[in-house]
Length: 521
Length: 112
Image 1 (cartoon, rainbow over the protein chains, first blue to last red):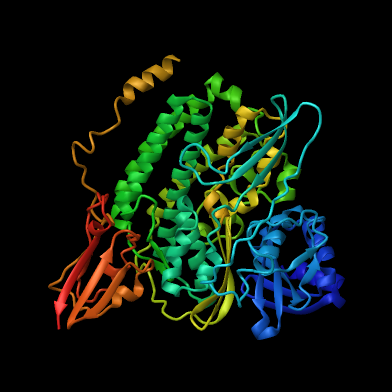
Image 2 (cartoon, each protein chain N blue to C red):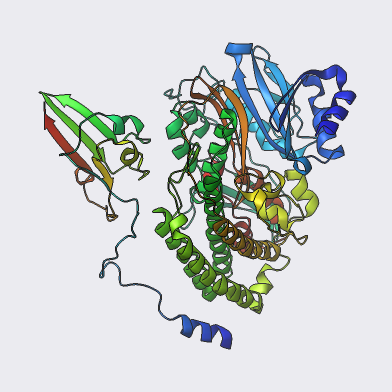
């Protein structure tokens, strides 16, 4: 870690204003003119992924806005955070999207939420504030009151257009068939193959980050739990870990083990549900019915051990709220039955030609696209990105267990299905290890007062790397940035569908397992 | 094909007869919270910690009223956790559907 920081400081010595370190996070305050060059250097030359960009409004304390670029040094379990100051009177800064494509949505988000303009951004349209939102109103600025109801104005959104002989547009959504959330998809097709897709989201933007700033700490964990319904545990754990890191708290080992078990249970039911969805979308109802039955078995197991099918209400700052140690035998027995059935089912699925025909080579995301967009989680791993927060930045009790991180290079729906199947088996093995080595002792420690400070909380949700950056001040949350994995993965669908036929879109969409709720915060 | 057929027959019918045959929630299930008027001291601690803010306490004509609405309840059991006098309990009841909002509020009162 020191070597990397040293090499950067040596190279950009004149441009670095301040260096500070807290635990595994190194903050470098740099001049804003150099930011594009530095990000490019870190991202492309040193191959360090950019995992998040967020802004803070520090006009009251320091007289400026700040933008933070979080890079994850996976090899050394560390983070490098570049920070630039932006004067409130001239809120402009150089965009890095032309060099680092992964910055695209973050910069547009900051433009809408803080009114800081990324100069040179290739697509400066609005992202989260829709066209009926008045100009100059930026909800995450500190002077914006949460109760404000801005007037609606008239405006229009310009879609990218593909024109030519025989090119047709198919608009889909934002209201879809079935109980899913809103999102607009605009396909341009020439015959059956898709030649362009543009997605538009954030129809149900809820202002979660603003809500965090207006609730007390003990309630905030329940808000985090509800950001993305089926990734409840991951969000709650990431939130709690950020808080515990600020407080310098080491939670009891038993709580760490229980958290690990809960996270893996969540992964199992999500992955099995996704496999059921893929089977549904290729009209293989036998596979779908059996996978859904297995998912239900896991959900009922969740309910028996925690009182909540989606494992909610278990995490708290300082540990967990319920002990599941007494249910050890029940968990082990249920999981062994589930594992046996699941393996058989996967064998059956992959030996069915009508299913294989639909999923092989469908929805391919090439490694360079996946890397460029910073695709995370099982989708990234199916495209050859060997990253897993559990292994690269061990948290909870993952340091103590052996597990494999399945990676594939194919990048198609088939590869993503295989990766999910393998991860389910790994998760079951992890739960077994955690239960056999469950330490005795307390499950939570008291955490009434959280000191002022800031820290990153991170976690590998079933969909991928989830990141929280929290700053506390006077026992309140001053800023809470939430980066859900879907925020990174949504754009990859625009590439995954290219050259595929329209009827394959639902399968591709399902295989990416994208969350609307986690994205539209 | 044959394999699929065998598995289908082996698995058999998986659906249950619910709601014709009632199904009890497992022990420890976080269901409808219940207020116990004989134990409650009206201290207001549950009101303070309730994340969605669905518990309210009011005082009128020398009478204290504690009301809990299930409409927004998230069944987090924070009220149960903080209550010193065990006056809030989460039950195993989960069939909360109702035609009126009034049915979804539980109220306890105490004369001062």
